[in-house]
Length: 213
Image (cartoon, rainbow, N blue to C red):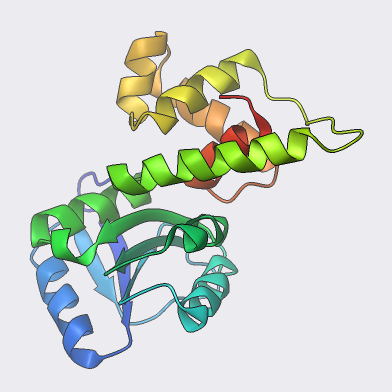
């Protein structure tokens, strides 16, 4: 979802304690492109949920799974710390972006929310490196199984995913591949729909795991 004219991105903030939630609401409330809402409707298309937590414990994962079942919702996770073992589970819950709490200034938090609303992923560089490493290990393990045949990803989809894994946004991918931004979005949407992937981060994880990038 892009911000244009009077259109604003709806944002729902969820935190375990009211002080943390109030702080995030205050930070985001100053951005004229964002509209804070109290809850999610059955169809939350275009709404970004910001979930703030200390760590990714079973309760947080359960909350992420509930949010992922809300039609059209996009999730930003703001977290103090995360173990490598929890990273893939978090991505597979439909999290579009992850932000360390120590980096969650008003400006940075707003940037990440807007990126999620546009459909762009946003992972800290250190987590992206861990995700690539984790997917590499899974890939080698899966490819060693008898009868392994991965489903197809086209060369064009692989090119887009490779740049996405390097941290490029839609505009940068379009520029490097000489595509329009609409074409890049269509490529990603077609692949995520066909392979039942939740978002761009999940698509990158899938491509790495299956050995396409």
